[in-house]
Length: 229
Image (cartoon, rainbow, N blue to C red; front, side, top):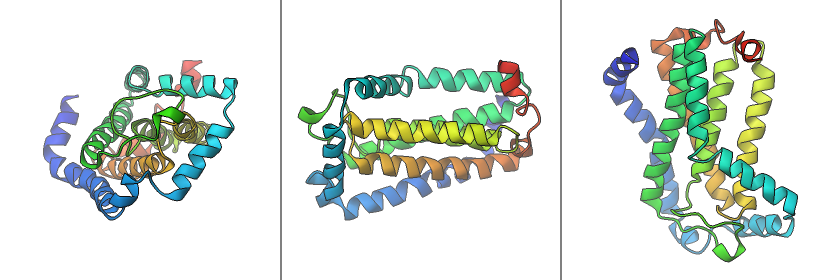
């Protein structure tokens, strides 16, 4: 952890530039589309929400609720820290730090973006549940996409690259779709959240791998799934 703090102190300007590089385009887009956001989003925003609403079933609703709980603030941080600890125990501490930094950074970017945009959530009368806070971009989409993207990059040098990639992509896309299904976010909220997190994690990987080249190697990580079993 001390080496990570040293890394942050030495590279805080680069990390801040990366964060601003993700955040500023969102501000620019939101400024251009302010009137559209105020009126409830793009036409396809409302159309997709209506489509999801028309195809709700008890089973799908239960699944979406479960995904919202697992990917929310009570469980995802525990999963992230647990996997980071497991990586550290396998002598792959940089990978663990990268995973935590990816999710934490995406979460902080989401807080800053919501504070800047103040976009109201969709009509609560059509939502399965009610959630506090602003709508743009989706916090669930950003945190879970960051979690998934970080795992893909961690396991990419290993023989587990494709199973992890497929599972991570399905999870990230499933979380994004579930937010629209539940009616708590517009499609643009989750789309922008997804793309922003991918950009953040890719940039963070490029920065951190300069300090820890082992991030690009499979040593320790390659045997992790076997050890877990």
